[in-house]
Image 1 (cartoon, rainbow, N blue to C red):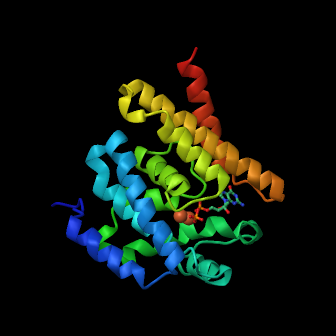
Image 2 (cartoon, protein in one colour; image 1 turned 30 degrees about the horizontal axis):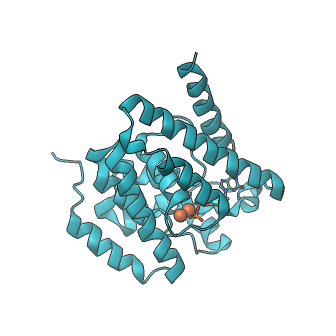
Amino acid sequence: MNTECKITEQMLDALREELRGTMSEKRYRHTVEVERMAARLGALYAPDRLPILRAAALLHDITKEFSLQTQLQILQKFGIMTYYRDEISPKTLHARTAALLIPEQYPAFADPDVIEAVRWHTTGREGMTICEKLVYLADYIDLSRIFPDCVELREMFWGADPASMDEREREAHLRTVLVSSFDRTILALLEEGAPVSPETMLARNELVEQIHRSTR
Ligand code: DGI
Ligand code: FE
Ligand code: FE
């Protein structure tokens, strides 16, 4: 009764090749860079979860290039009500639709930890698992990103030399960098006049609270 799915190197290689034909070159390049960054972060924070992290990274944006109409159709097909607010935050939908499609389209990778990391990679959420945090951050700071916030956050994370830190410092460093990522996303959304998802606010507030607690 082994319900745990074992993700092998060959499976990841085959998935990477399969995905190449399903998205634009730019999105594919981002996808493989997120896989690399997730593996680097995983080596520091969750060395026993590398296959999960790499699979989630490869699958995280499989629906990113689908139209709003297709995103809404997928949600409806899975019996999920959609609201006007989904239509005015269209960029948050692909994380939900990708997570929904994994079990039928990529059943060999339908591990709950893979699916949840994909599900929360855009907004984050309160109580993020280590895999969710690492895929979220890898997506933000992968080497293909040249947007100033991304470059600064990448420098903030790696410039502090997290490999040289003890475990406690390294955990604190991850929290600080994650808060900065949420702050940047929230600020950008405010500047655009876009809605900020409650999950993003809850994710940020929880980490801020943890930082306060740990420095008391
Ligand atoms: O799919 P990627 O481009 O690789 O990255 P992503 O999944 O983090 O999506 C980033 C986009 O999603 C960015 O344009 C901002 C938007 N976004 C992130 N959080 C929120 C959000 N949009 C809204 N409306 N609300 C959010 O909380
Ligand atoms: Fe995404
Ligand atoms: Fe992405």
